[in-house]
Image 1 (cartoon, rainbow, N blue to C red):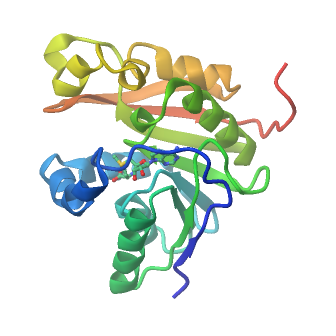
Image 2 (cartoon, rainbow, N blue to C red):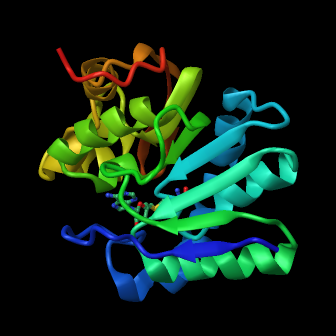
Length: 228
Ligand SMILES: C[S@@+](CC[C@H](N)C(=O)[O-])C[C@H]1O[C@@H](n2cnc3c(N)ncnc32)[C@H](O)[C@@H]1O
């Protein structure tokens, strides 16, 4: 068993935890099961088209459900989950141990990844992006581009896409909360392009009780040079 929970060396900034508040974390898995988040995870894993021997990073892995799904479906893929929340990572580690699935779990921030350039074949992100402030989003996408190998890809699902007030609770809240508003319209593909990820694409979307959930894909040419 190789679950590993490492400590981030850079803990300067705060973060928004999974349910918006630390004490609600124990409710997270039940809540997301009710909302059918497992089906978003399955779609994202299909979308990523993983192959044996590849390395995958999930940024904002929370309690580890997506990482565990990847490992169950693709035992020959190396899976790393990263999250700033040590309590969420402990839950992920306990589940990995119970299920006998080896995961690497690292404490850290998407906008300051402690991995070498061009290290991963795919980066996954599920319902994490709306937890970031606008400036963190661009920084995180630049980091994703840096750690992706040439030909690698980012697969992201989150509240986002075109806004329609009938699209649900999160979409309506987006008018008041900047980090949510910043997820809607064309904003996510624009940020991906600004981070010089290739060909940002909206792959699919679903309208859920909480709002419109959109699936994106973008590639990387593996470039690690400074921004122009
Ligand atoms: C709604 S949860 C999603 C968890 C998991 N991806 C899933 O699909 O169940 C959002 C997660 O993003 C994490 N998060 C918040 N700020 C972050 C940051 N700057 N970098 C990486 N993860 C972050 C939170 O700690 C939380 O675990």
